[in-house]
Length: 201
Image 1 (tube, one colour):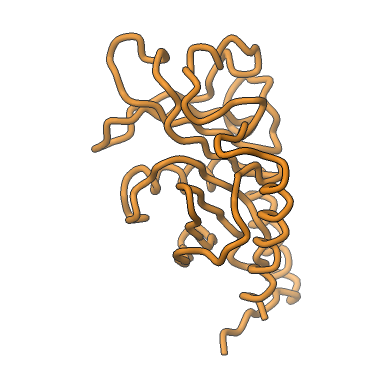
Image 2 (image 1 turned 45 degrees about the vertical axis):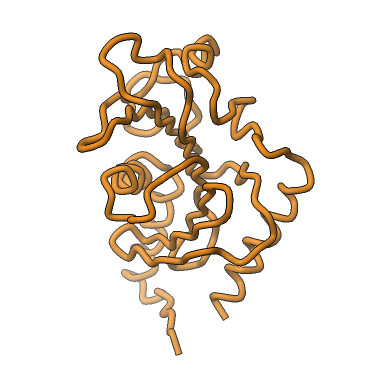
């Protein structure tokens, strides 16, 4: 039953989005894959990243925006946005955006087609279900209730143990309000004896 619900949610999201965007859609705030990140920073919302680091064992830089646990920031606390760029010691922001990840309460802005996922993997350590689709697009679902919690657009490794994926999953659990709300809710249910049990038959 849960698989059917998750697939239905996927189809509704993908059907809605595929009718209103092109092959290189704006993922958030008019930003697209391939845009030069230096132009993105001209928007006051993106002027001061929450974090900016080279991803370990990769040639990519991760730039993070979140309203949670991020010091002084005007960014919305209901969502987390991550940009991955090619790493460079000089002119570090003057590179095209290669990957955009969006976690949280916002809608799922990805140009997906209404096809079954190419791959599905469970990530119990993060409470997530990972689904891969065509055109380098991915959806993340809450493992407990199958609600959509994030989208990733852009070329990523197939191996979810890769440092790039692990960095995104860790950002989700640390910075995203929706994750913390879900954890708190299930903890309260467990302590009051109302926790739900999900059975896989």
